Length: 350
Image (cartoon, rainbow, N blue to C red; front, side, top):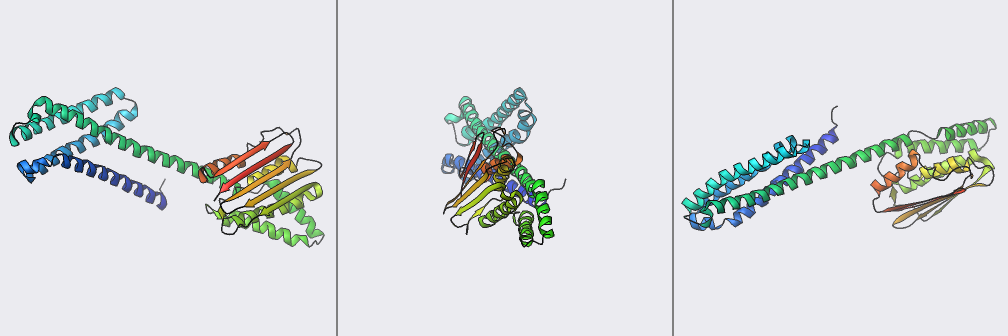
């Protein structure tokens, strides 16, 4: 399946970032090594200094990427741990052999006898330094892979939740829509003055669902307006059967919120509370808007035969996951589900 322009752009951007992380790593390694070998300039001049740096860094780069892009994918990531261990040891031995010969040449012939011209001293130094740099490169690779996998998992979660939100957006509760249309038909037969208002509210809801809620965040005022229209149409559907109240404190101007965070709780209240109760049904909603937060509380009664813990539908589970992703550490959701009453308190920090 062909990748979209955005996906290609993100992939290229991540590849670009990874490349420069590697470049930066080797620049730092080279600077550290050059600082450690500055005495070569004083003893044998710049050419030997550059030669020593090129040999050492080239061998380190070679063994590092041989490990990262051949040994790890072919052995380690396939669970062939012994084979991976053998190949790493062999590569280190090969590196030590080549580097030790060069060290004997450099410290034994070019610079004159030094402690590093002794084979054991040269070999032990190369084992320690090579193992250290190899550990660093593997750690860097694993860190980058972990970050990339975590980013992909987050992207999958967001796409899954967005698909569920689109599902919620693409449908109005069939019973709700059916009853609204029936009531609208009845009002038109009676030539009621309420009919145009019902059509307007339903039209506003459809416009919000289909067009205005496509962004990640929407004006809080529009989300509340959608909820108000929903409640007004539910009042028409319920008639005098239920006491439905919405109280708003504060101003929504200048605040934004993720769309459809409030509706699942209200739909849940109607589904298991107001529409089931025969007498004295009620639904009380309070929205308190502060400078840095919005607090949403909802309380409704329900029949005793409806067991507690009924809130497992796609709407509520989606709400919980979306809050975790969109408002990590900036939200709270308290649900008190009793046998005869349902209460929810949700707080979101802007």
